[in-house]
Image 1 (cartoon, one colour):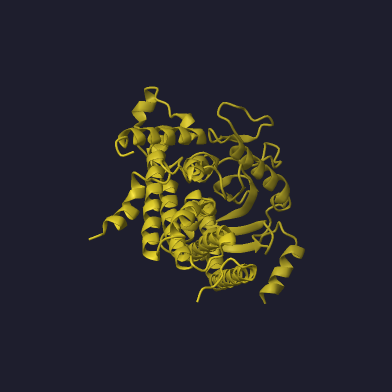
Image 2: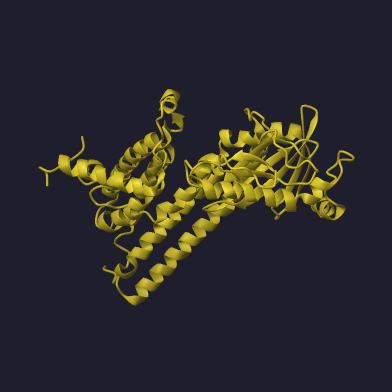
Amino acid sequence: MLSQKTKETLLGPLNVNNPVVVQVLGICSALAVTVQLKPALVMGIAVTIIVAMANVIVSLIRNTIPMRIRIIIQLVVVAALVTLVSEVLKAFAYDVAMQLSVYLGLIITNCILMGRLEAFAMTNNAWDSFLDGLGNGFGYAIILVIVAFFRELLGSGALLGYQIIPDSWYAAGYENCGMMMMPAMALILVGCIIWAHRSLNKEEK
Amino acid sequence: MKLNTNSNVYTIVYATIVVIIVAVLLALVSQVLSPRQAANVKLDQQKQMLVALNQELGADPAALYESLVRDTIDRENAKPGIFRFEVDGQTKYVLRLHGAGLWGGIGGYIALDEDKNTIFGINFNHESETPGLGALIVEEPFRSQFIGKHIRNAEGDIVSVVVLKKGNQAENGEEQVDAVSGATITSTGVSDMLKENLCTEYADFLNVENGDASLNGENDENVEPIKEEGE
């Protein structure tokens, strides 16, 4: 089905080469959007789509880009894509656009995009770059979802907005962990994930 | 053929072309989509007003809005807006609110009974408050606290409704609702927004005696220009 290299490009970022816990990219947005599960999911999907599209475009024009202004060109491509997506969403899916509002703009500054464009798309063909974008987007989304899962469950006692912790627990003295609402807790959780991940993958290193 | 992609001329020409292509593309998309976007914004505002009026949105919010709205003073390019609705045979006034939260602007619509005192319903929106904290002001549990509160004190002066941390007592005898815990600045923002809008912005309108059924609060200067534009 898929060749060994394609498989690695697509699936590597999910685990052994994860953009967040191994490459340590995109941490800033991982702190900002993981208070609840829903924005984390939406952000994960949005980043996946945009990183894949930007990878393809940059890969297609990679041989024409002047080396000295390549970062600026990459940034222009990403910013144009994000603006396009947000305009289209505002016209055809207004509710989603409102929900994403701030996060959509945040995608431009996501280090994963620039990181993948510079490290992969500039030296690989369009199809591989597309797979690399998808893989890294998903890898990012997985970590976001894991962090958001714990933050929403422990911080608000809910998942996707639905209450999970029964009222009887609250009556018995259980309290939501306010610390989970703070951005610092996201960093600590990411740290814990990195710890677990490194311990599990020790042999491969 | 090998182009020298590192020469100065190439770099400048390349940058110029890329920027022009992107600019044209974005301008084009924005032009094509802006009517749809404007329609969406309008529909969203109508939906928000319907929520403030405690209406079920149903399948066709625009039609529902048209069936309830009676009169509007929606000054173009200006934040204030006053809308008169008729819900179940009773007149309700909806006022557009705007203020500042923690990270960005907050706004909303407040629906008042005909006495211009009792809150019939309220709805909030925000640009970028923290999810799970400040953003909770748009949720039903926070909003429903306002229903039935009065914006005037016993003497009939407009004093607004204050948002206070649970357990605190309003200083000047205003009616109060509980703040969102963990979102003090957003809650204070809501409180200030209500006070400023009701006590200052809409004071003219609110203080006019309820004579006839027209939007009596606004004097003719404000109404006339809109009519002319519309013709």
